[in-house]
Image (cartoon, rainbow, N blue to C red):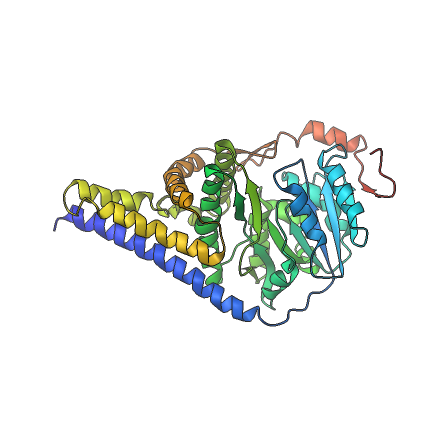
Length: 402
């Protein structure tokens, strides 16, 4: 047995063991949390902030889901930068369709940071009437028990409850690739971290106790990082509390995706992780199946293992991942096996692109993870603000020109 064989085969066995153990941990966590969620969870009155901008796949369904929650005492605040945004008529229609719900549309932008989503939500945070506030992205599909699920994860040690995005309703291979990134890869590792008490925020859904964040400097404190979720994690940990994740993350309906959309989104997140949590980012390059399976393929080429060993290993590797996805209720199909493979081939390229670049685009805003520069935040934006950019609440009884 040569040193080469021992090194490559040990690497494969170690990676495969970690792969299987991580999935076993997620399953165990889910079973334990399911028992805990069996109890009745009281849900206090609260505010739901939904920043909106532009139109996207399944948007009417995801926005309307906030009106259909199994809770009677909450308000919905839609926050939009520009009153001429095409999402504004949709928000008005939904509010008119559900007149029994306390919902308002807030228009305007407060440039308190270099994060456009945060600037959009400032007005909502200021007008929130309740002690608890949920920040939920526009593409999050809320289940009827959405609020009960959030509060089931809340205890006296909690400073923030979050849900990473789960991809759902994929239409085509590229949407499957995004599911492969979001669900059984990124989602799996985030749930593993939470199982060890090392949960970290992701901005798709965040449940705050308003007084806790206000004590840390208010919503402006989340502008200390380019990504508000990275800043949220640090704010909570500095307060001596924990970020906790829900038992099963909420779905983001994907529909059709393009290669550019998948690449740019994953690149943005990779660069933000590299900037905010470099120790967690560093091992990502070897976290997928690409390098372990390549190591086994090299041994097969050299004649140390049977020629069919890499194929069998790939079936076991991705079969286990598909089994986890089925257990968790994530999309699974024969096409997902190809999506897993494409994702793992992309991972090293994404990692290198994240290492050697710092620019990214978020909804039309060009940003930089080191300088925090944003093209829409600068002299022109300041002049617009000083020239009378004003916040207003749109009353659906007065449609404002619609």
